[in-house]
Image (cartoon, rainbow, N blue to C red; front, side, top):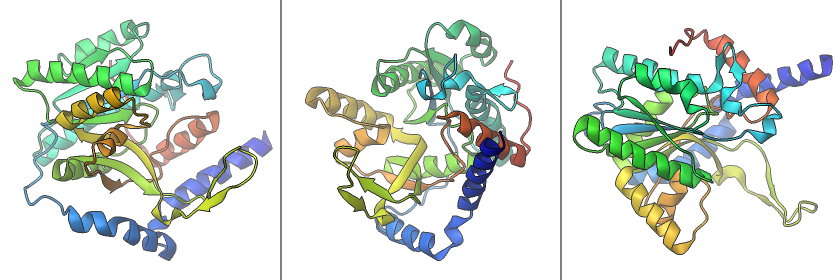
Length: 303
């Protein structure tokens, strides 16, 4: 137990130190190198940011979480008294609209929850509570299928609610419960300016390439490497075109903006926070718990 506690403390210390790493010269140098070209080509829009009214949020909660070694998918595991998934739902359905009201911004148009049908009855009371603002979609076999199903539902519901489909979709992994409102606003602003944007942070680890998993082939320079997070925000029209291209050409894509890259269209890197971690292993839950304790956020109550 003492060894496990020591390991977790070290992980948390490294994570918290990383949130301040941008002030250190090595990180600052890499940030300057990595963002100079995109920011010079795609400057922020001169139009005033009016909010999230043309953005629909897609929450992916259809995963199995096999690496958690738990008896339920990771999005339903307890995190400081609430299921991991509830942090994303609370953010998009409660905190973000409240922030918009306080700052004169339009709130998100629609939230679609991609979830296995067998869990949907448990969440029907939450869908009913938000009266048209939240809807279910079924997952696909792979992530791409889940996003496509969710996107089709988002277009349908937003058209019913607003008379026209939303212009942008923000795809978020429910296993990232710690994303913040400033991160969301930044990535949405960038997407509205460029057409597609993804949250990310410069890689801190040394990355080595290997063909066989035994011998090192080469060390990849990390100055140009970014670890991407979610939300990833894309124009709906472009994502639909991308799905067609991926299907016709049988392309392999690993995330949502990869589809936009396949179209040859620009994707803006939006600087995020290292605390926007993905719950993948049991140790991640302990680190996330410590971060939440430090933030002292309000209790989640969706029902």
